[in-house]
Image (tube, rainbow, N blue to C red; front, side, top):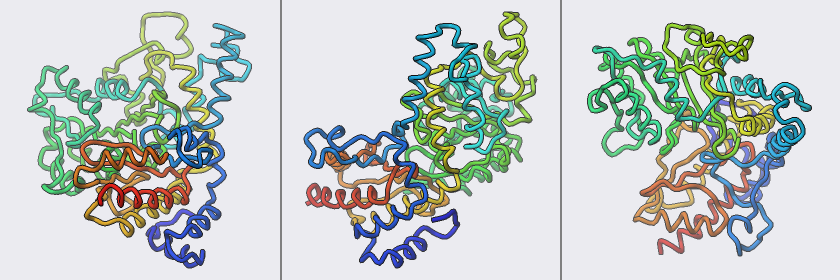
Length: 457
């Protein structure tokens, strides 16, 4: 398997012939794919819950569960435990001296530097354009404070209609902070009637029509509900041509799909690290500020002492001198334990590339898409995630009809299969390339078919 633009189905057809399996649902096919997976060794880098741990009383209790929930919380990389325990050891042995004298070479006063370069690589940025700090929504507020500067003419913000609620709340509150009314200053891009996805041409039409009034276009890179991967470069270019600032929430994109924030000329972005980046619940987040903005003092940023020049930070002077780049947007010293947890996860990412992960994801999610479309009736299930692999990442959003979604979800959980539900009728499943197998996909569909036969008949 290698990085390619060949459609997943064509590749799968070729591999089926090579495997000599009788069908895509034949265990021999999944075994062939897993055997020839160049990333198969990375699975052993993670702690994978057993069936018994997820569903007490389940048969084959010692087998690994099927974990398709990396879009919500990634699994624990084994290196995280080692790195975090090292920090606890330093804390116990050195106390406050760990800020400058650290037996493992990670002095706390520079802890964010241990993950800055690797984080930048994952999002196609220069090192100085990325800062690891805070949490996702607090970072969104920080960036809006600098980039949302409404005027009488240009005061609107364009978002997708089903933006993640926290983003929606934050942006509405930013609008109100400027004594404006979201009813007048917030544009929510709606899908066409009867559709779930947003068409790029409709987004561009809105930008063309209202661009002179729009201060900021703020979309998610991958839509949390549908799994749609927006055409980031095209939207960014169109919005900037109309004088808009463009920011992206990459919560579901970072570590999932290749993005090129610097080359795409994105103004700002933010993302969390506990989904595909596997840094643990509530893990530390990050920001991107393009270099053309990062060193400018013209924008009124929210300031804190960790963004102050390192050379004089501990002189305790009350004249703010920001560090160059995105680091100058930092506020407080970052959590050492959550930053170190991210470092542990990024050490696994260092064993591969986003291109290699994308190549496997094409096939893995393509395999899941094929089986669901061919093994399960449309009377029961629809997939609202784009069929085009270029417009999606790992995640597929499955709509279960006739009000049976929670029955299916609970039935899967009882079988030690973990996805997540989004009411009223969607179950999201995301086979992630770092630790998911083709056999996991095959088993999932086999178990789902049996469950559907029980619940719908």
